[in-house]
Image 1 (cartoon, rainbow, N blue to C red):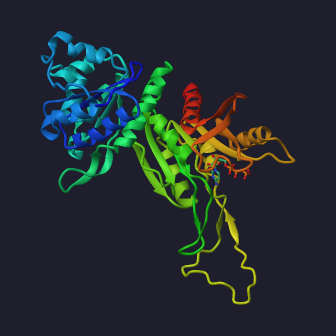
Image 2: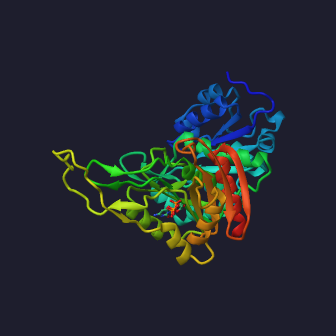
Length: 411
Ligand code: CTP
């Protein structure tokens, strides 16, 4: 039976009556194995899918769905009041409706009314129910009250249909929960990006020479993915344009997959029109081969050189900075610099910030290639207003939040 220290963060895991309730078992395990004190609060309908013994055994806690069990402990008030975080996964259309209207007819809905900590709701339902005007209005009400409602994923639903409405991967829901808990622990405003639509690009583009070969770069996409996750945890609607990234889709994020710089360009320009902020964390290739060979290129029999002629790609960051499809939007670029005879890393960063016309430039010193593929990063965030914020070496999520702090200040 799991037991956690008294200082362990207290998480209430609300479970609604949807088929995805089985995935909440995995989420519960993630919480307990990482030292959280979890109280599962399933609804009566959730127990139709996964029985009380499973929740009790995985959490080491007694399980009730009503307010009358162990009533001397006043559970309908105590559980919510003492929580550091409430996560409801899956949140059914019925639960969203009850929460939006303040109904309290079981232990979970009572808990939602007494909780003063951050609340994350992760809906899962059929596309028709998710798109119904009643659900849309309930979600808007909850978001306006500061609840983080994570957008469902697209894919296979119960039965044969596919569409939007899947519960995101439990490990990615866990990542959002940890982000929210981390911000609450330092007293940060939980949903300062609520109502904002942000666009992040990530990964490295590929410029194909022939069907099997390409020119590429070492960008892993981790920093962009960390930015997307951090933005979801701060309440934003997030679009992530990912170039050749082999990481799982972050929960609540619309992921657009691209390969080449031309595709990245199209995807970013099209999504930028609706974005309050654009963060170009991707590494687009500056050049592409002038010619693409439909057949695999053969070696020269005489061993002679085979030069590749390159054409320059569009500078996406400069274009969106100068054109600002959405007036007042905040544009952020990255600069991987090594410093040279013409200037230090920061001097080159300042010059690039001015050249590109963005509001913020995140400058990395990449001498030695240390950043690529790493889970950590360090940088200086330069502002067009002359500001400079140093972010010491830490997990890429720390830099992500420092960047959103700067963006939020400029909204
Ligand atoms: N970038 C872009 N489009 C390109 C190349 C880069 O939008 N074709 C963006 C990157 O996403 C990053 C920023 O520009 O946010 C800086 O990229 P970098 O390669 O350092 O800039 P360059 O313009 O290539 O600068 P340099 O003159 O040093 O090559």
